[in-house]
Length: 532
Image (tube, rainbow, N blue to C red; front, side, top):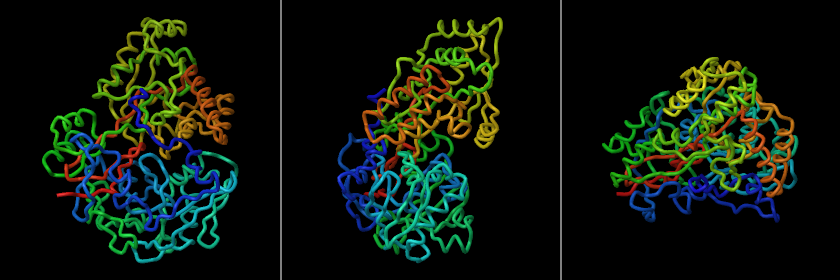
């Protein structure tokens, strides 16, 4: 598995905090994101050309591209609608304090430098030369307001739960925590967008849902919710960051149809296709490709509050009955994982020896010990929102053991509502790490997040104590030790288990360069450009 995982260069908040070690600030980068004009590794990173990884051609300016996603946003506020497609579009409209590249390295954006003088304080030097799309100049009032308004938005509540205050002194933004916590700043920086205080106060939060005003290199010129978004170069951008004149985002729901659209020249880019379409593109040999592994883990979540799933032997039997290898092959090939933690973080990923292997005899013995057999079957409801042929394979295996898996394919909003109501027994999901902070994975089994991130509704005081250590330690060896102990506990208790890592695959025109996909499935065109 480790050979297949993308080697993320920045894997935990201690690496983020290197700027605070030894008294060093990050270097200032006039013009916001320093790599936005194609210089440096990220400008062409994330995608290998079909011709064998040759160096990207010189950066040029101008031209327009059409980008096909499986869906386009219903609104352009990435906080209230935090889907990867929405963020993929809005990351070009808004700036944040820092710009996270494909390796989760913090690059200068609104902030030119940052430091952590003590465990509960962060300071950011702000570049006030940015302009909003409506012509207003960025002020420190805008920056402080952008942080504090997150407290009033339900979707950003988790990111703000440990923020005590934010205030400005000159051009320095100070953010105070309630208590030391290594997950707080990555979550905040992933969530935060810099907004125009006067614009929102005049027109309300709903205004940025349909007519956003940011400081990003592109501005919105046309938006049809759920159908298309057109972005054009922000000509007044003081840093002249945009390389393309226009980006048109369109929705083509079917993977095969997105690929065909690139092949026929209808679009320049087809995002998040399957391994099958990716192989077709390789065979064609005339496209540029993005081929990476995400940190999004496909997994089964088991609601331990429901009978018979409150029996650990039943949970282990369910895991023993799943053939991971065949499950992954049915969808065209995906990297297998056992642990639901740290996919895409190779130094922390750990396959505990306690994870149940595929073993139908062991599954049968455990179920019979719980009084379950073909002669005395049990029904378990299993909900999901994206079909996968591997689920039906698992269903067939369990039926042989007396477990009748009732499959429920739900519309996503219904799926979420059922979770919120605790109206489910098991669910299949593909969770991504949204901030490049691997410790966020562990919060999905933290009793303090029961019913939100902790969909297994699992409660273990020993595990919670380990997570408390992981959140505050600055010792790398201690972090590895406690996260492995946590992994061992979950491997034995099995409130959840991993199956695969989702691939990040995209096909694009041979003249399009500089596109990459982050581990959280956000597709970035800030560095994209066309050649003849």
